[in-house]
Length: 367
Ligand code: F6P
Image 1 (cartoon, rainbow, N blue to C red):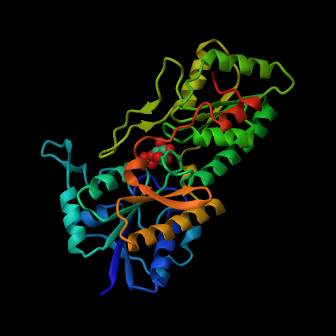
Image 2 (tube, protein in one colour; image 1 turned 90 degrees about the horizontal axis):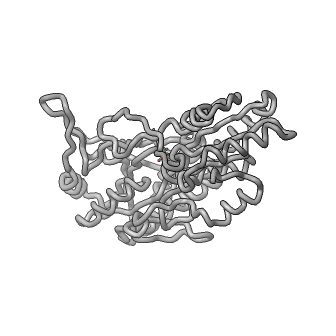
Image 3 (tube, helix red, strand yellow; image 1 turned 135 degrees about the vertical axis):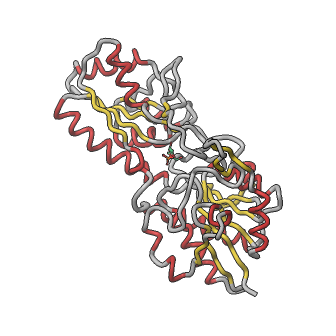
């Protein structure tokens, strides 16, 4: 009898998801010991929980060539999930119900031998809870934010940094032509990895990350020196989760049904407002890079990492090493308990070499 693997992609998408799916299917197909079937659950676990189920057979033909495509051919969602499935009440309000036991049962009834769940922090937390119920799950870490513990990098991050750096490079030339302040807002939630990496790669004047709350007066003094010096323009890169000292992150109050975390939005505009509020009338323009960072074809680094993760995830599934997550510890692909990976977010260490490099190359970190 064929062995069966269920694959899902959960949370915000990122470049490289398809490369993982392809690698799982290819290594399953080439396995000399067993015959395997790989099935995708559409939109994370929704594919199993919906009636009728929404599943997709993932054959070598289906996944041929998809490693170069952005997105995920099996869909994703960052809302709801088996522990907080949204249901509409009679009065029009929404509640969340726990359908995790039903999920475990349905996966058993479908005779899946292993489940490979490709996702970020939220998805890995779900995987750990399910594993504690005896669910045969293997985790594959993904996120452009690079904030998952236990792995040097998640795939998708390097492509996002490339997109952010390219945007910064373009803003530098227009800032120089018009003697302006350009503020570029990038993603990353509570981690400043994308902002810091792009700032060093692109040579921003100011880089603001959530790990270092910023001092508006310090920023103004850097801008002032710059505008009164030879190079009369300045580029600021700000992470969406950055905040002023004694201030808060900028958020969007729009509550999407089933959403598990607050929507960050407005960091660049808030900085602009704080500068102007102090009476400075520089020409300032804000660019919000948004989901461009999550789309498009993965760069070679992310394709390679994603492919290595897919192969390792299949090996773990075959060896029945459940409750483990694949991880990258240069130069090796290893596995770690999922519970260790989710213990704490991997934030930028403010005393790290990369922050030091930024400071020593003249980038103001806002403090
Ligand atoms: O976690 C990945 C991420 O892209 C964050 O950087 C960002 O805050 C969030 O997802 C955006 O999510 P959504 O797709 O719901 O807008």
